[in-house]
Length: 133
Image (cartoon, helix red, strand yellow):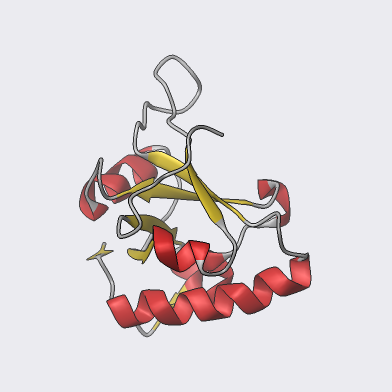
């Protein structure tokens, strides 16, 4: 992971898979890493891209997203989740994404991550959907 993101009010975008998006509301599972993610949640930085552009890049890789929600860096940090830059550079298997970042949940057990994800989901839903396909 790269440098810590220091802009506390910067919104970090999270893609919501269609199977986790019902009646306009994302599932809380979208706000915690899966077992394959090594305790790190993939997000995109609003300071470097828009919700629409982040969505377009995400689906261009063949992945699915029905909507984009967001959380501020300070909202993650209030849950002891540090956010760091993690740009994807050109030349690899994925397209360049300089806005890519990671939210590190490693301070929490898997059970605690589920509890935290529910709280973060509420904050993201209160902010509202930032882009819907």
